[in-house]
Image 1 (cartoon, rainbow, N blue to C red):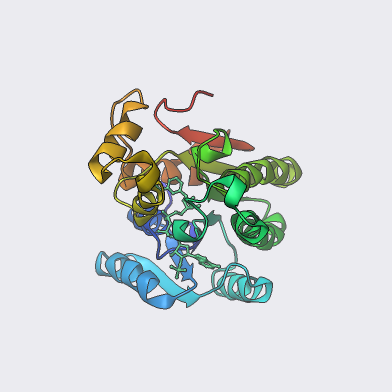
Image 2 (image 1 turned 120 degrees about the horizontal axis):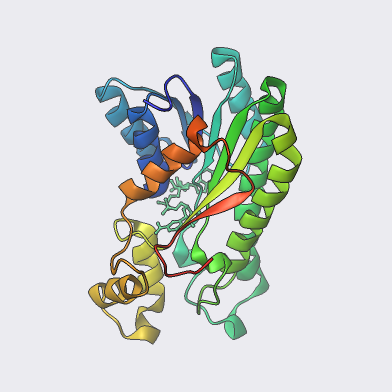
Length: 263
Ligand SMILES: NC(=O)c1ccc[n+]([C@@H]2O[C@H](COP(=O)([O-])OP(=O)(O)OC[C@H]3O[C@@H](n4cnc5c(N)ncnc54)[C@H](OP(=O)(O)O)[C@@H]3O)[C@@H](O)[C@H]2O)c1
């Protein structure tokens, strides 16, 4: 158990990536404080963990609400005396941000992902960092996508948002590593089990003319393995990055695109 008794907070824990990471962290012995904007999906994840003899506590926290994020983390620190891992898995529905050509995109729609992703990540990271500095250790992790580095059509402000998160990861690391805090990102390509990918497909379906199966085959054909990554594989890398085994990694984004995006 490489995360035994680590205190981990996950934001967006009711989502696909957040839920998978929560299960994997629990399997490795972490004590989990799971949060989300709406409780029911987070409670479902926590229920599975508790049924497997893990520890998980659920709270409703809007990651865009500075006071709510701070109040919750103080509650965690009061209870456990520290926070070791902060994982940002917040994501907003693709239906709100994808599928519109830039020439037809209005400013609000462009700004929505940029503002939402950077603000939530910044608040989560800053709140965690303030407690971690006092303890001289900790790891802050976020999830991005290859849109950060590639020009992909019909993705509006999503790419700029992901690029901003990656840039913020590097800056946070530069400032926090001297205090013993690592800051890293995970950059998966496309995970077929998730609603997020289905939405990305639906947003482009009319233009691409592809079926759901053809879309997955197209994405898989870009990887060296000829297949897409599973949620479990992403979560396993998250476990490693959160563990002390990754003590040499900070200020970097782990490329999980299996060759579809060269470093
Ligand atoms: N799925 C993929 O294929 C994939 C690939 C690469 C990278 N990623 C990245 O991984 C991250 C998570 O993706 P996902 O597929 O897990 O998305 P998801 O299943 O839609 O989960 C996102 C979660 O974020 C929560 N959330 C949204 N706004 C929030 C807020 N203000 N405060 C707290 N929670 C909030 C949502 O809760 P509500 O539903 O209650 O709003 C939802 O549970 C995203 O950054 C995405 O870009 C995903």
